[in-house]
Image 1: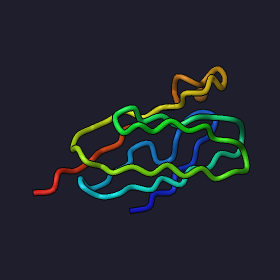
Image 2 (image 1 turned 180 degrees about the vertical axis):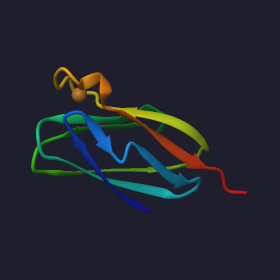
Image 3 (image 1 turned 90 degrees about the horizontal axis):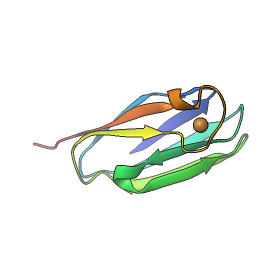
Image 4 (image 1 turned 45 degrees about the horizontal axis):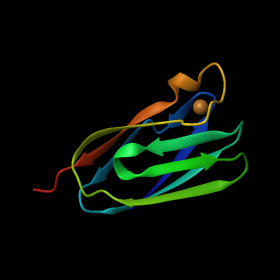
Length: 92
Ligand SMILES: [Cu+2]
């Protein structure tokens, strides 16, 4: 499944991303107002986001649970607010 994500000063939209366990996830991430990053350590995602560019991160959601994601590029005073949650819903 594909999810469009927008990074901005300072946050992510959406800040909660829901996917189903077992699916390949394709995050299509853009930023307009500065250089940011996207890290989802649980799934090995670490990407730098550049203004005006679209960055794609793909991974298989092979485990269920709530996993934090956040900006990993020091981007200013609101940097620590740039975080969200990836929810991988278990498949019955
Ligand atoms: Cu940041």
